[in-house]
Image (tube, rainbow, N blue to C red; front, top):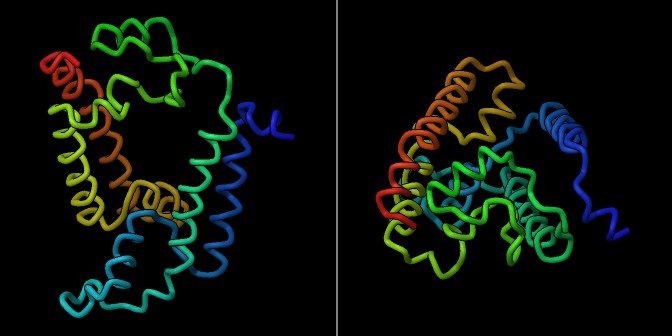
Length: 196
């Protein structure tokens, strides 16, 4: 059974899971999203006494905290107990491009890194000036952007689009444009400049 679980699954299994989750949420009037958990945690901590945005009945959103906790636990189990022995499938041209940016192990499985480059995400490089700057600035931008857009990528792309909300469509287009600009224009220049 463990061997079956550690093999890559077909993408349709995730798709079916998302359909079932969205059907249940729509049936019971819920909304899906990860960034709303921060608001819920702040409300639990008493931030509602200081700012009206956090003054709501957080117990109605407790199920979403269970979802986030389950995602964290599931990720831990997948990495530590069900890792795939197969290398990540990356095209030769992508490997060459990543190597030109200083990422020399784009598809090797080293210490559980698999899909993320060890040169950026290993514990030794967390305090690298480039990584620390990217993590801090990126975290700020994700927090600001999800608040400014009225939700995060999962909330707009999964919940908002399934409800046919035009603002969610506009937000998703913005997310993709921002991601493309960062991936192809900004990040390569930073990686070459700081030569990780």
